[in-house]
Image 1: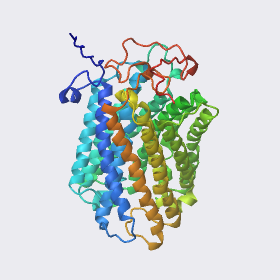
Image 2: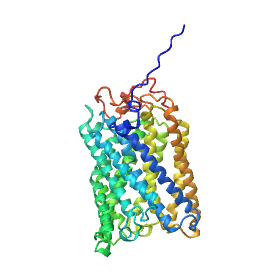
Image 3: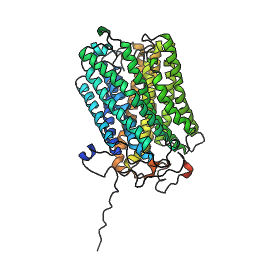
Image 4: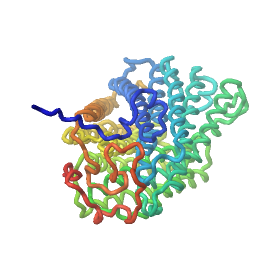
Length: 546
């Protein structure tokens, strides 16, 4: 006679607490909202990536033989709008920030769960307008919406595109507000400001930029819509407006927006470097305050985008000096990350490979930014492919590499399972190699004088464009492989355990995936941040430590 073994019940966590689409669409759990953002942001990344594929296919030959000029204008505009407003700005804060911030400070959720859900719906509303524009044929202004082209001469979809970005800005404002209040009011007992993870410092600084900067671009785009629809003169000289005023307002937000995209990645890198070096970050306080300094100085450098836009030489000198100063906090971070790895017990897991790649690529992007901060050089390099290369070294080589590092680092915590580590290593290497092959030739193209936004170019530039297009195919493969194995790991990956990397931090003290309430008992923090001497690992937790 045999006795049936009762089925083992899966422990309750945020993934299986409630089933059904309705439970997800009406959830107030920050972790589920993060997953909703992950799905939506990933979809926009795919669409923006397809636009990039079309650009590189067109530029593989000197003649405009794939698209006409109007179609090409629409393709690079939609690539920029989607990637910046609907991927880069929300990616790490809305996904990893949403998921991890309450866990890292020992809270059960964000301060305003309903507002958190509303922010996702606002994001989706803005994205819906963006999709409508895309399906209707696209807009042709470039992602900067420069006047008077956008206010008088571009196609009629500029208003709808500006409306999409306008609405999306409110999602950023709500998220930033939620993060700031949560960090101030909901930290666990004993979690003082200087015991906070550097990831939290980075997101707090980012949230300040979101709160202070996003309303400026929202008002600017609203004025643009009024000018285009009602012919009220704000920026268009034909109506008595000033187009340079638009550039001042646009870049007053859009340069700090660069730090909205890169600061969260810097927070990720600080966590990853510390964990896989098994050392407290060198100069913790300097790294923390450098995030605040970047947020402050980021608002003072917008004028270096206007060196060739009738700005006085004296104003240009001031903005040039400030642009050099804002590089100092970033340099502090890079130096401290390198010092953290020095004599550390470095493990080259996939998240660490992405982090090291980030340091190299971001450093190149930052140093080439100094070229553009110098007025004399910038006059020659403005609107060339040098600017394209610099921007992508910071945004793709920096922000997206940081995003990939974070996803690979916290994926076991998010889904409770490991991914194939060998494939992750291959993907990290392909991404690094493909990126450099794609964008480094563009520095040379820009120095030689190839203007951006043109789909027809002199034949002598073809060899560098072919290299760039070939590299883009390698880079695309580096992005595709993780999408496959991460999805595969959700059902088939090896169980991860609570702390598979041997990391410090409160998020690693709860189960993987976390329960709905995050912690059964509110944790009490008694040690300093990144105290590896106090870290005790169970046998299960060290299974995946290299």
